[in-house]
Length: 564
Image (cartoon, rainbow, N blue to C red):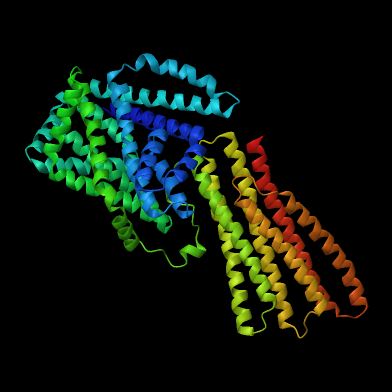
């Protein structure tokens, strides 16, 4: 085989994978929001979760996309891990639709007469100003690219005349002499290729072509399909290594599900394959042998996953206990690490935005919690308790810095994907939000340092000063509370004008206290240094309220653009 033939094969495979990716992402743009809502609402028990996972995966043509959504809902508390496992089981059934699409359209129908008209239809839609038309054009474009890659891959494989290649025939003949060991060998080969290609659909396409061209028989082709089922779960487990505990548990549950299925299928391998083969021959009696074998591979893929679900759906609770026992949360993970962003599973840009949204909501809650520590610090008189609380605030400030950096990096990665214009505006607003939230954390730390300087001095605030500080802290606390409510507001029920009114009230109160402070110092009600500490706290609260308003503006601008 010359280097040019190999490059043509690799290029054809790249076209296929690019088409699958483009089609999947375009479908997610068209239906992403509705599917997220559907996934969250329709998983009340294991059976609805199963059907939901199958439907969503068949719709977006990506089991990874379904897994990303599922894990984000688990972390958000909208789904339990048990419900998530049922959705993942359904996703395994939904992903078999891809093999049927390739079998029916790629081998039964001559797509050469349709591919280029589809390109002609897609291009004008892609350049449309309307995002829905643009996304639909991208879907058609990806669909055409997928079948251009599949057709080219098949033509190149046929031109190589692999079924008469002595080296390949000799290798396969030698493998068949090993009996059942040949099945195990091709199972391993299928798993390794899937891990390398990072695409189970691509390996399925290769398997369909090799079997339809006569290079592999049905049994060895099915062994490759089984290996692909394990290989795709190993990939997700490796990707989840850097993610949080719930993501790792979901990935491990996926691995357990598919591995168990492969083990019991191996015990009844030949009878099960013969049963599926006989069923296809009965249902499709008139098709050619090369098309029939692709139907048998697709039918096996579907039957394997359906039977596996029928067996394991009754054991979701034990699977949940096993994965929770194997994977323990890392120390401080629940409090001090990103909960919703699973960096190792970043694959579907549109759907990753919901994870970033949840993380920003948590960031807002943490800054509010940090401000509440300031209120406690102000009235802490015991030195040891004061130092512990100050150290905790200092730690939260470092966490705030890290959260800003990690969320911003994540959003930048997401923005490199294929996004709708609305999502690009959303990411821009979210980046502004995390910057302002980090500034709120800095203000809280500055307040703590001011209180620390006062604590180390010999004097204390007067009762009148404490009264004014309490009033300012209460107004600022209300502003932060309103900001958190607005961050979590998905249905636009919170009025942002309340935040702007509070900010005006805080500004007026700061100006009033600033003028009063000059009079009080002149009247010697307290010394100049205590006046400095006092006004530092008042001014920092007013500055913090400005950052809060900036967060609210970024959030409300996004809402207005989405609803416009």
